Image (cartoon, rainbow, N blue to C red):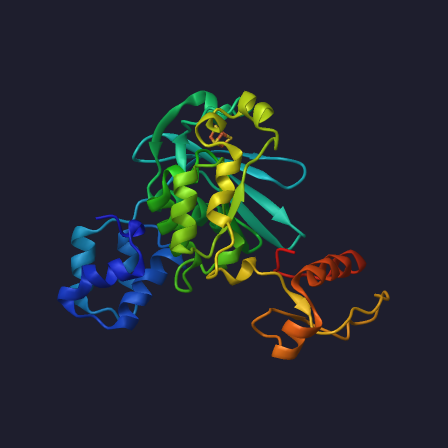
Length: 314
Ligand code: SF4
C-alpha cells in the first residue's frame, strides 16, 4: 500500500482498526508530506504513534520516491527537472523563481499527452499513462528538498492535460494544500486545461478552490483549430457555458459602490468601499443606482484606479 497516494481521511480509514488518536494519524500524515519522509522506515521516528500502528505500517506500507534523472539550470534561475518513476516513464517539472523570495513549481500530470497540440513537444510523444497522485506530489517534494526558498505555489502546466486525469490531480491538489500536508494555499494552485469541457463542467459543479487556467493560444476558432486539435471536439464557445450567471453564483453579479465616485488622486485612499448588492442597504441598492449605470460607473472607477482589485464581473 502506497502511503503517498492517500489523503488524511483515507489514512484514518486505513488505521481505524487500531483506533489511534487523531493526533497520531496527523503526525504520520505530516511526516510523509510536510517533512518528506524518504521511506517507510523513517516513520519509526514519529512520536506519539502506538507501536501496533507503526508495526502495521512498517510491514504493509511503502513510501516510494521519484528519481531525479537530470537537472538543467537556466541563467534566469529556472531549473528543469527530469524525473523517473519506479512505475515507469519519464516526465518533467520546472522550478520557477518569483520575486527572489519564493518558488512556484510547474508539474506534470501525465506521461506524454493525447491532445497533440502542434506547438508542443509533449504532444508529439503521444499518451503513455496517467500519473498517480504520489507521482505529482513527489515532484513538489523532491524539488522542495533542494530549494533554498520556500515553495509557495504549484501549477499543473507540465506534461499532460490535468483534466484528463482529474481524480488523481484533484487528490494531489488536496494533499498539496492540506495544512498538515505541504500547506500550499489553494489559491496558489492552478490547473491548466486546453478545454476539456465535460471535465470543466464537473470542476465547476464540484466547486474546487484551485484556479482553473485556460490555454487559449488563439481566440479565433479557425486559427486555434490549426494548432490545437481539441478545438474540433470542444469549440471555444462551449467553454463558457459552465460559467454562465446563475442565481446561486454570487460572483457573477455586478457590484457597485453605495456613493458616487470621486476622482482618484494618486497617493490618497478611496473614501468608499465596494459592496456587493447583497451587502448594500435597500435604499442604496434599489432606488439610487440602477444596475446598468452602476456597471458603467464600476468600469469607470476601475479605469481611474487600475490598482484597485475587485471580484466583480463588470
Ligand atoms: S494539452 Fe498541453 S501538454 Fe498536451 S499537447 Fe497540448 S500543450 Fe502539450
